[in-house]
Image (cartoon, rainbow over all chains, first blue to last red):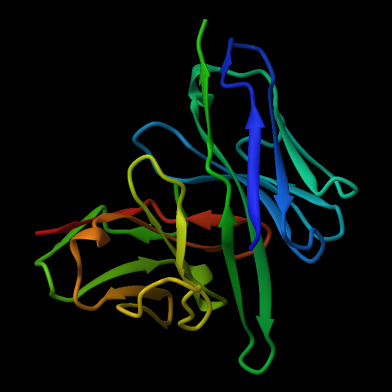
Length: 126
Length: 108
């Protein structure tokens, strides 16, 4: 059974850089989209970005100038960096495994995140 | 603003059936996936694809789709189903994922 274990600093100051890492245990690292999602206190889920099976990255346009995601396939790990933190970045950060599949016969696709890390609470405060 | 729209809250009597909906143009191309989130816990995938449940998800959870609307139905809601539910797909361009704003389900 695939598990994601994530870690990183939980208390940061404004202007600092958030760094989180997520390790994949028990499954293949290739073929999937490795994703970061966050959830501010009392609010909904926000997609941050992903790294695809080819190693390419895509980011939420609202965070694009501050975020980077990388992967170390030799360790089955992927990482998130978010720079120039403000209080608005206070949230629980989750890593997740995602899949995109196309059903050619009907021309439909499906996308889902089937494995999630437990989350890391990140607080940005002076 | 989210490209997927959900009602903020829905309630259901214990043992009854409830439908949670999600609307968005991307749902004409992508089937929605649905996640259950209980307080203090990570989201859990409950429905994906046409109407597929991951292992361990009770069969009282089902999904359907028509046009730009996807629905999650809980048939015979239990107290433990009380949670926030989020729909998710890629956006209309397919470039990146989007979440609905979430629906809080209360079981009365």
